[in-house]
Structures are given as C-alpha cells and as structure tokens.
Length: 262
Image (cartoon, rainbow, N blue to C red; front, top):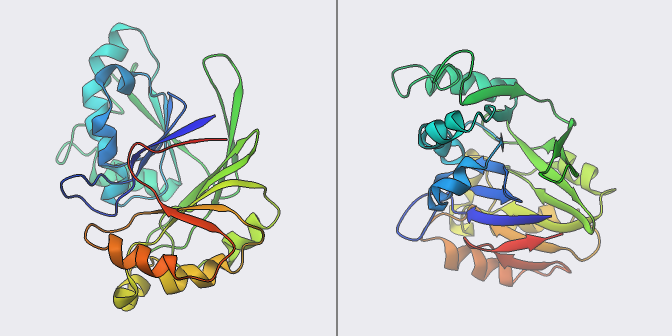
C-alpha cells in the first residue's frame, strides 16, 4: 500500500496545505486544502474519506470535492463517496456545513436517491475494511486521540507494519498503550508549535517538541517518525528542537508530495 501526502501543515500560506493523505487512489484520510492539488479525474476516483475530527483544516475539501466530482460520478453511475467519522463529527458536518447556508446538502444532491455523499459513523477501536480495485482488503483501525473536540487517529495495516496517523492530539497515554503491541512502519504525529508556544499548545491540545519528547519516550524500539501539522512559520522552531531530542526514533518533517510505502 502507498500513502501520498497531499497536505501536512497546521494552517495555510503560500506552499502550505492542510492535512490530507491519499491511501492508494481511492481513500482520503482527512480532507484539508491539500486535496485541491489533485486533478479532477483523481478526485473522482475517491470513494471513501476518513475524518479524524471536525476542525475546518481537516474537512474543508469535503464540500468542495463533492461539488467538483458530482457530475463525473453521476454520469458514470458511481455510488456516493462515503464519509466515515465519529457520530459527533458527522453531526457537525450536517449542522454546520451541509445546511444549505454554508454549503448545499450534498447528502441529498443531485437527488436524495443518488447523492454524491453518504455519511457513515464509526466508533473508537473499530476496524474498517475497504476493498481496492483488485478486491484486496485494506484494514484501518480507529485509534484514540485527545483533542478539543471528539477526535481519533487511524492505523492502516500493511505488509510491513502499520502506518499510524495520530490525528490532532495532545498528550495521550491511551495511544501508547495501544501502539505498544502494534508493529509500526511509519508514525505520523503532529507537533504544531515550537516550545516558545507551550501554553498555546496545551490549551489547544496540540504538541510542542518538549511534549513530543515525553510522548515518544513511551514508544519502544526505533521507529520512522514523521512530524505533521507544523504551523506556517514554526518549522525552524519545531524541527530545530526536535533535532536536539535524545531519542532512538528517526524523526523527520513531512512535506507535501512525500510517499510512504508499507
């Protein structure tokens, strides 16, 4: 399996796109502004979107993608794009996005019988299974996250271990308890702010390098760790401090266009 990084920044600026990962060609994990760099035909191949939480930087492309691909998918007789998330996240999408005020309700368009989107709740610990175009199964576990709104991360099972995305999370002991028994090929973990913004990181339930060090100390072995969700302008502060950490893990910053095979 292959993951392509479409966006991995904590906000927007020139050259910065918010969180979105493309699994193979048909599954999005979060749908930030990075989705907009896909060609229209590639967008139309997306059949599933897994959403970690309801914050705008992670869901902003869902309504825009629905509008972009509606005509192509309808003409081809394709089924709805399935949005998978916690019930609270789906309710937030219904109430605040697909409400006819912020955006049309694409769970009812182009018709209630054949909408371009459908909403599907999952729960923490659930293992989701998706067939690819060759009918091979991909398994994705919904894992714990600790954020200011109901949130999760995802663990994608691969031949060479799991690709784990922590989602937006502050310190989270339950995460490390779960990962202790899981072979890891890649760990994608957010570190939004430098240590000079520790208070902001704590209040907003994000990590800074000092908190990251404490979190990674709970992870055994030597793992490929990829830093995501760095705020624009914070890259030097975050990665400079990360480079100074005493850790057995191999840590680097993600960038849009990176690919991970596992």
